[in-house]
Length: 293
Length: 293
Image (cartoon, rainbow over all chains, first blue to last red; front, side, top):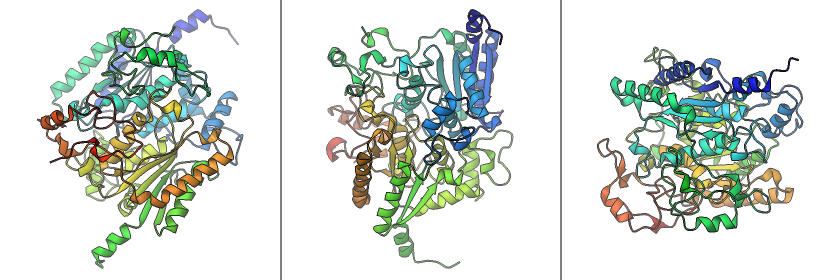
């Protein structure tokens, strides 16, 4: 096997963006947004890979078919356990391995989708369930800012049916920051990804063409500096006692230090205080959380 | 067509529970939890229907196959629009119609699943995406407490990998109340369902048999009074100006009235205040929110 120069491999890896894309129609606004990203990033010299999930007829269901060969425990099929073993033994199904290879190569993953039920469409949830397997994407020791993909970035880019005010803390749907927590913290940042602020296109279906064109232009403009953006703020592992005895809870000294702060740490780590405003949609000022020693 | 007595139809409808169940193995703890619910509810005289999603090989992906016959707009496939029309014209695919019939018949739906990435497995997300279609499950006029299924109940019953402290506001994963918001408020309550407190089984895979047995017993005990439980608290539509001019925002008089309250209204409608503790996992005292006039 030819050994490539590590420096070369690194710089090659630095040049790839993966777009995981979920819309059924090539004539959709989501498709146009994906095309703008491909065009703009290629212009910047990036290699752009698109996983067009519907076109691929990507399987969403986590089943026994995801493991090649025999199961460790055919009597009691545990998806997490079986895929961990299969990953270690190179026995995951070809479609999963192909996506995992793309993830490894990418320095940034953009998820492009229409919001379905405050979340990603099932086909994209299936991508997350099946591709981000234990061992490959996380372990109990490697999660959040210690995570396997801590040197990579990820972001959500999505269209909504609802308007922006509907998704405010005083709007009928409640705060969009709360809605994004399971995807951004619970899934992507859990695997280590630094999360760039989501790109949200508010109800494009109800906007005149001119507004949609402006949305495309705004997206193109953001893409120019995207990879230099500061990521969103999450709670670093250093602040917690990461042991079963310690309950994976905030360290007492950190908790004490935080008492004087007006806001919680993040949307999910609110500590019974008001949520830090827009924690899941805007870059936060540096001083808003304590430094780990 | 024979017209059945409306009273009879009603009382028949009152007696059905639907369990939407997503685990691959009949030997799993999730399966045992499902079995306990079937047994206990049948003992109480309920008719129990189980949608065993993996056994059904339920399709998760929202595609053109969900519509029988021609599309309204073959050039630009918009899933929401097309399924609305198909529902009106009785042209949704048979598997969707079969599930919608079960939903209509049920007075309670229990979702039984292992938590995957702070949410439901993709196969269950697919059930939500494909079965809860516009027209059948919601409209812009009929949502939340005005919703189509306001006389029905729904609840999540799930197992976790993480421990309970990990999912506290000071735990490494953040507050479980935040994680449940998109499913409970954004999906089920959006369609009108009254939401019963979730039944959470914390990391059963890491518990000794005795603890798992106690979990099953606890679930059985709760099921005895389940349908008489008071549902969780959400923000009623009456508090909002439900118009595009009004932005679907909290009414100014309500906002003023809430100023003196120590907590926000719900997890998502936090109004910049601390979240009402355990809003998404425990029944709240009545006085915690203003009455609509």
